[in-house]
Image 1: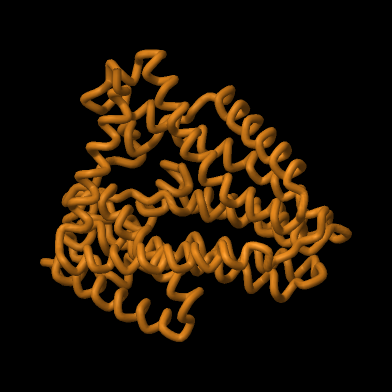
Image 2: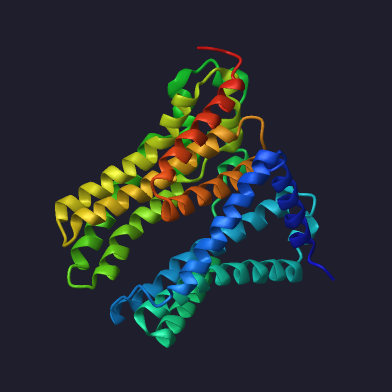
Length: 364
């Protein structure tokens, strides 16, 4: 018997795919992405023995632990939403169906980590150590996440501090209120999102400085991974944005530049905190590490802006799917044809800005 939850998710994916790639231009973009991805994969397999890392870098396999933790929490949150707000709520409450859903989700997560683990094993020449460490860390992270209670999602539980967007609240409270509303979702704070943002930046600074200090004697790969890990956690948190709120803003007269700046505020603050920590501690290779942090935060900023400019008049799932595929295409272009990447980025952002402007009907 087929798992009803998986069939429901597949149906949602098909609808989101049809919404995001209904025009011939979108299908052409998808074809280009697929072609570039296959070319990049073929070239990577041909040069699999190219990169080399010290054997001590096998400890990077422990990063599968945070990945397992985050994936378990994400799947559990999704199941909670299905049990409360979807048409398949009875199936989401059935133990056997839930177990099958978790198994399928972790199988997909394990396949993604398998690619990174295989690359790390080849680069360090320690296949057994990487496999054992990554598998143990992933299982431990997922088990820990399963033991911790889930916090109620503000957007789905109807928290009174973060109400659904409406014309009476959004249009009459000014840009400061809209900016605070945008901050609520990524900071998980209802009443005081600014304070939560400051605390997140302070935590990022502290953890990055501690990682830079305690990883001084480690290999370069381990040191870079340890220093960038707090920033990676923060940008994953910052990627949570309220699709319904953002999609409503152009109809209230808020322009694309204001929305982009509001969306970019948290990632920009996170980069400032992490870069300041690295400069303060001044570990070896501090300048390339700052460059890596800059590219990491720039990537999440571009992805957030693309998502925000796609939301008006679109469903959140289909807009996110299209944004992820377009971002993947840009990354592949940057790897294969670096001079073409800025041109492709500028052209696409210009088209998305025009699309957003067409949704505006009130000029403030």
